[in-house]
Length: 337
Image (tube, one colour):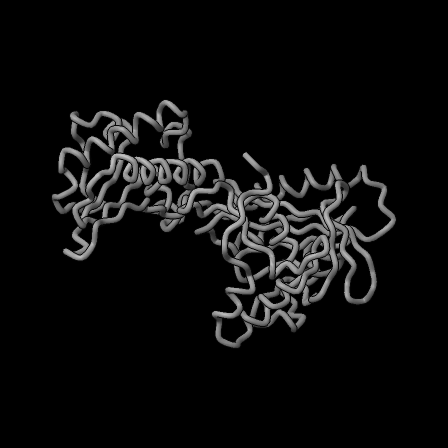
């Protein structure tokens, strides 16, 4: 699989154009203003992991660049000039003229599970197209009970876990599962209304039963051919799990950075990619339990969706898309920071 991914027809500038004026638009404009390897980031096409037209995962190299651009935007640093390097990941010249090295990484504890769900989704879509399978104007949604239960556990404040055996991942298992789903459609079972909470147990479809699927089917009206979609509840992660993942990433990057021997400031940007987490609580725990130094980094920026935390010696500052221009102490001088 190509690490650089496959270009799409969308760019960040397209999104900005479609937004009304506002603070989020201003934030995205700063993201778009990064010049990376000689091209403005906002003009570069989004690059997906595969060339499937229903792919929703970004390519690794594109996501790394997006983390870089978002981190700089949260720090209110627009119009920076960057380039990819081997050690560190990027070298960036700031508007002040200062040059810094920046390492980027993600904290994505559930990446393997999300990837499996996406692979199954795309395989089913391809099977529906190739047969072709008649969906008869029905909206069909599918998930796995183990996945759904992690979201329930998360909402109840429990420690959610997804067993490795809960989602098909071997090629043979995925193929058998998709074939069984196709048989379920061909048998006309989808024409009966069912809720996602309805128990599924039908020995005519052993793979669907084996993997404890949850299926729903409802009418979209006579004007629709029908649609299939994964119901993808976020795989829940507790704040302790997120904290553990982030700290592991920091330790790994710290050991790597100590070998560089750079004579310029070094920063670390971490994108917390897991969703449905108690993000504020997780970040507060990270700050409170942090070591007495961010060395060898001058600063560590933790990014989660619409806000971020800037860790520097002596303080930790919260930033968000709305108030990013203000230096708001979040948890100042905690634990030696």
